[in-house]
Image 1 (spheres, rainbow, N blue to C red):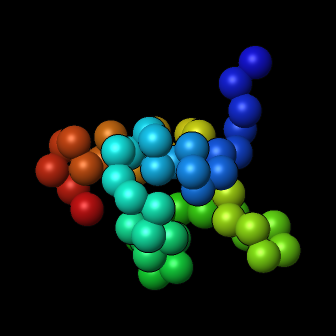
Image 2 (cartoon, rainbow, N blue to C red):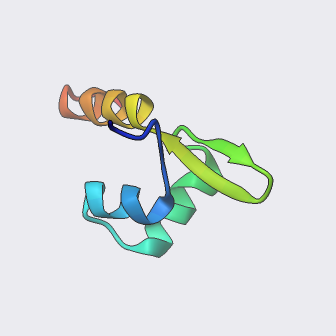
Length: 59
């Protein structure tokens, strides 16, 4: 079963970018995220949609 929420390190691997870039994108709100206390988590569905939008020339 696929997890619904991804850790920033998992998002980093999915996008092929550095750790700092992922946290920068989370902090400025560029990446859709959920805050659980001090932790950032990214919805798998939201990440897939975010990638799809950028592949189609949006964002």
